Length: 281
Length: 257
Image (cartoon, rainbow over the protein chains, first blue to last red):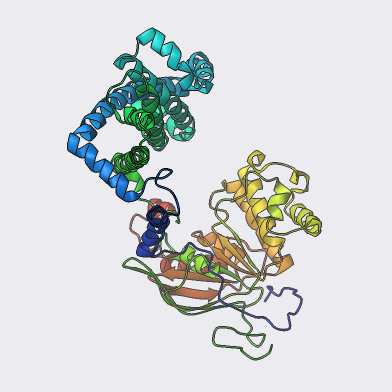
């Protein structure tokens, strides 16, 4: 009736199925194979080049030599002792550093006054490379455990602070407003609403902290240590044992993977809401 | 070009811009679309009604290629655009750049400005999206959709997030611009009045198929108190499962539904 509309007559209207713009679902097994393939290829290249004299074992120890070195460490019980010693140092250091940084990050993220007092100072300290603190810390704490734990604590504090602050800052203001309106204040607001929302950032920070704490560990165990996986690096360098040098790298890589797996597990259990809900409506 | 090239393509002999045949789509165990057939004629304004979760948006996403049908054919014209419930503007680009997004070169500028003028936002071309009100942002989204001169315009509840007054203005604007540019329109909505105000044809999607599919032959501009509109409204509300007359505690109940 009145709906007649003017339109340039199109001589030939071609209709077609729409090009697919959605997200392709990938085969899980193919995805897994692709993920594993690059490290596997690198491993194969390492093995081939060192066993076929393409690379001298003086420069890069072969996988066989590294496995043998590993066997030695296990046999003498050093691996266990060193691992435990380093684990204790790192655990204590990261625990202290992360704990303090978490509180500072929350305080400066949550309150105006906290931000004014804490943020500028921490941001200045944050840009100082923590390795520059080694001589100073030695003169303060000596070369014993206190020095090592302090160094690791400082190394892991700054990323934790930065990410916590960021996480708290990016929490949905509207949700916080609503929670305030329903009478949630102070500590309960922080624990009940803000911390869970900032948790993805905080766990991400924990991952980075644990990575950095390994750096702190190597630096700390270069001085005044008789055991520890950082000490092992120093030892390998002193005796020019290439197999041990490579072994250390492998051990660090394994620790890294282990830490990542643990944090992912924590992410799954600590943030059950992430598993539910979909991207499309 | 005249003959069909293969089973999947059609040419000018067909007087339709959308053709669905036996389209099925399930999510998990829920059969959202169960063998849907639909033709939309050139320039036809179709409103798609249905309770939440009945697959209105799924149908629209099939047409824009965001879902693939489990079975059946989906045929659409090449030039088609979407206005979503939220504006979905790129915050990092100015309004004009948002309108001409995906088009290259200086040649896109003039039509972009013209489209902004049509939605009454010519002076906002250099603004950032974050500085716009909800209604303004949605008008930019409309300009972005119209600047390509689509044969098919898909509207996915474009007024749902707007306040009541802005919604009325927006509805008028859409009616006016669609009449001027003449694309075929598929409007997904849950508002019967909106459908009866704007559409040439209104469809109720329910239980995977069309529960009601009727032409709305009411002269424009339409009045919601028009006798014909009132009759249509009753039928559509009944098809949607909201029957005001039969409900014993009617007055309070159906307002919320």
